[in-house]
Length: 68
Image (cartoon, rainbow, N blue to C red; front, side, top):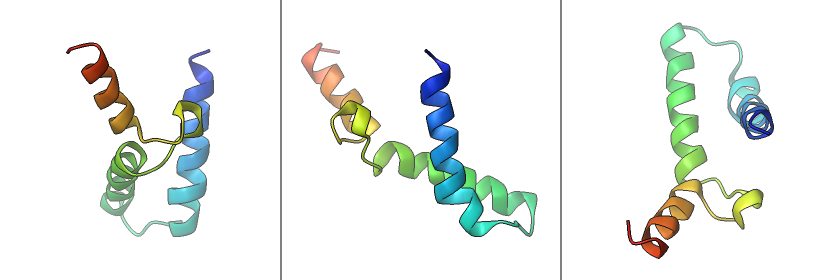
């Protein structure tokens, strides 16, 4: 079960961040794409599996509802 979300992440990552910018001129530019995509993925990208909200919002709602 763990592989499905991970496979989904890498599929989206490659389609949305890597392929449009490939080839990269430097390792640093590739690292920058990774960092920016993870930030986008968690803070802006809506996820169908969690009700079309962001992971950060889902985490905040969980903490609020569980008094954390």
